[in-house]
Length: 302
Image (cartoon, rainbow, N blue to C red; front, side):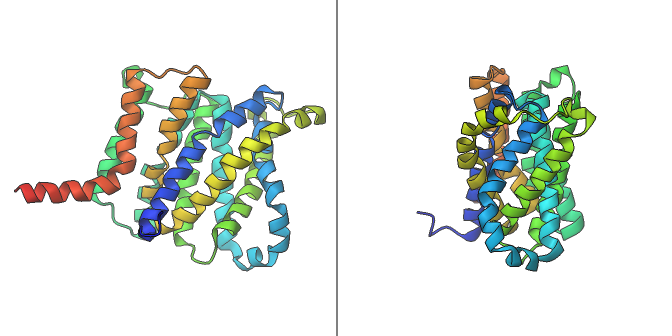
């Protein structure tokens, strides 16, 4: 089906799919939190399940992982820390607030890609940032002020956004690691980061949950495996082939999916304002593909 598409197009679809998958992952995360594995310990379990599933592959391929050197380890640290902060943000603030603050990512990614990689900030990417930030402000309600972090969950989302920008640049620079190796170190450092966050006072509950409670929430392992593992693989396969800022824009599909699902299952607001914001953010995500044909059409008209 996708065989005729260019590598860039397939990578773009993979990142967009990953965004859709991550737009659903707050559901099992909050499900575990509601079932008794509370606060940051839900994030520990959320990353622990995929790590356990990956363990046989890691044991068999540990030499291959070690051969990738520090480049792979730095990618794992950056992605693990970023997503651990973001996952916790979904527990400590409203889903939409966490999503919107996290998706300042394209701004940080484009700037870092320019500074570190020397990549061009094209008119299409500037347009994407404008639409993306406009959508963010509309969803937040610009009439009540700028979307400045207001609680610990908001700050976690913003730190996660900056962390992913670093991860995207590292992924772009890396040329020796494959998606499976990246997934393995991502889940490993995700667990480590989540445990550290769970043991800090800001987590609110540093007591490890009872084992009987953990066993009771294990059914959530099924949606975690279905949502998280394919989504992570798609992201880590697609991201190295694209500009870091473009990756961030394509991941904005998560914001639309997360906003809609949070309205359906978490009773968070989804009215005309939120729908308008989602539309603007969707345009931002598609701008890389819409801008060239629009420009050609305009030039033909002249």
